[in-house]
Amino acid sequence: MIKNFSQYLIEEEREVYFTFGRMNPPTIGHGKVMDTLATKSGKADYKVYVSQSQNPKKDPLTYTQKIKHIRKMFSKHARNVMLDKKVKNVFDVAASLYDQGYRNVTMVVGEDRIREFDTLLNKYNGVKARHGFYNFKRINIVSAGARDPDAEGVEGMSASKQRANASANDFVSFSQGVPRTMSNKDARSLFNDVRRGMGLKEERSFKNHVELPVVSETREQYVQGALYQVGDSVVIKETEELGTVSFLGSNYVIVECGDKKYRKWLDAVELVEGGSGKKQDADIKDREGTQPARYHKGLKKSTKVARDAHFKKHGKKADDDDSAYKPAPGDATAKTKPSKYTKAFKDMYEEVSVKQLNDLEKFADRILAKFDVDIEFTRHFRDRMNDDRNKPAITVNELQKLFKKIAKNKAKNIRQNPDSEAVIKDLQTDLNLPVVIKYDRNKEEFEVINKTIMRKKNFKSTSKTITTETTEGKMLNKIKSITTNRKEYQHALKTLQDLLVRKKKENGGKLPHSTSYYAQQIAKSYRSVDRLQLHKLLPEDAVDDVKKQIDQEKESDKKKHDRMMDRARLAQAKNKNRDTK
Image 1: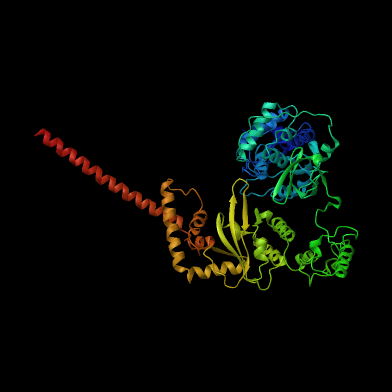
Image 2: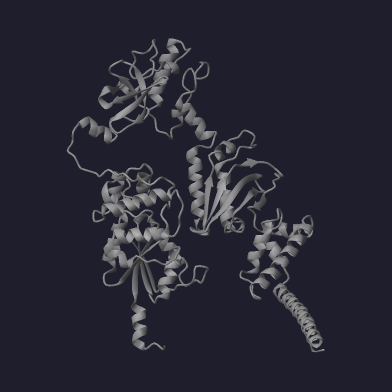
């Protein structure tokens, strides 16, 4: 049907507001976003989309379960909550809205994600890619308001808190995160769906929350976390025994005294003055502050006094002041461990700390996010990084440069090896990082788990090797395909060609996927075969050869069938003649 001029004008002006999120599970915080979305849209259309990712840890609800619960929780927005299994990410949303005729779009998100979505959506506007195509006249990203994770009520509510409540089987706290208009039955249903998705048992007996007046100030302080903490040193009033708090109950604490454990009411114990339950050194116990005996064991009294003065002087200095980390008197000769200040100095200047490794992970995630790559380190990675056998020692700076090289190559070396084990090699620094590359199809993300690291020349492994170099790596694969790994490439090429013939025959003369896809599948089965190089070895007219081979097989089958039919007709004629006689 041909559009008239007025229809073109209407299409040009069509505007839509939308939001997209995991909402797993949905909370009153998400309701606030929807209210903001409806308000800002005015007379324009607004739509709510949710992701389809699912895993027990962060996404316990299935896609259909989320849609069902969101529509029940926020009934006034129910018609605007979209159920579309083709939409899996924000690019799919944009392409879908464009196909529906909208030409101006506004996305409502949390304040902390405005910059991210503004960059992503505008970057691919007018660009045809695997997610489809959209070309809006205007793309706006607006805030739904800031969220304070430490706040109470709507402002501090989050899906992670609700998952924690479900995991702890705390329905009372969980019920505070759903709208008051939601029935108790529906709230219990959501609670149990989250628990089932996390692999936990369904809860059948629930306790309803009733607000009661304050009974005890001690109890209130305890609930707020202002009375006791795990690890606090306390004394049991009745027996004068010294112990440590190992567990915080609802209105009691578990106190460990050596090998024994006691369950005590809140008013049956009290904190040790100064927060210390440690034995004090007899020589200097009268000095100000605490004087643990184990910090002064085997020292002269004069050294103990100097040591105490050292702690008081340097303990108040700033963390970036080098003099705050000088060895304490007695560290060199006494049979005692170095002070915490000396240990902090060593952590900062000799070994890579946990914080440094966490910062490195954030750095790598930031520069590789545009290529859908997520970097993770195992708990053993830091130990291997600080291993004395690495000569010279591996530094954070070296790894930053390594991840920059991967980003410069657009992470192609990782993206081309999904669901595989490999070793990332940096030839300039002799660094070797055995990794596991997993592709999450729901999140459309490559997860790279770094198992360990070592500095070693000519490191050999049965896993596939991925080099951080770009041009050199490609040239090396090309040389290997005609020299050292020639037979392996020839075998892989023959396997690929046979696969193409079979797939085309099975699908009526057409390949269901591209030839590069099948090259990637075959390359996974060979230790030293690169997918790109294997695909290049495939003749340009390989598809025509496949088609010709299929036609030949069809012709052969037709002739065989005709011969069988001729024999059958001849046998039938002979039988008829015999009967006539």
